[in-house]
Length: 198
Image (cartoon, rainbow, N blue to C red; front, side, top):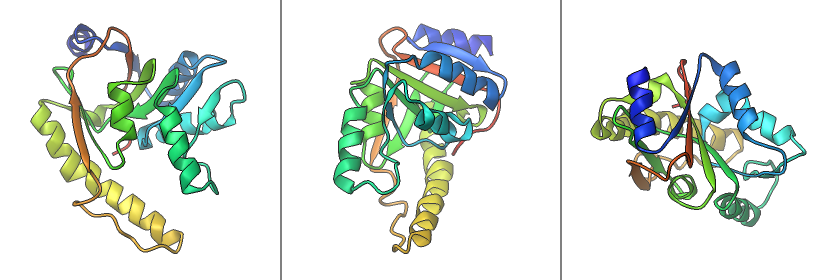
């Protein structure tokens, strides 16, 4: 693990390790300070550790929560845009290669765009199931694991809300990116020794 951490730090990431979801949540909370503005990228990993619920309950931060039930699509869009210029953008990743590449696909693009540029810091929650050997393995993981699970999740949600399921492999992942390095300590990784998200 230390070899991985060293490599991730070498490409500019600040790295923390957590033995489980609970420790990951406490680490995350310590990094999101009172007064911060916070944006969100779609992430089941963030939800899995309890961070999304924690952020929603906090009254000492400005949270741009596009997932709030009942908001209009215009408001959803505005919150996603505002989230891209925050103090801290909170998200997960589809894959992280052993040489430090963050590999992602996104539908609308706000998550991958914010990871690349905009927020002062980006907090990325990474379960051990997201670690892959190469960039190519990361893109394979996206199409064979993450995309399939997200299609099921989003289509089931549509059915639950009396809407027509519309997601498939042709439209679930419209923007593909990989980040091989960044400004020192801008991207903060919390590596969790448990499987998280898709």
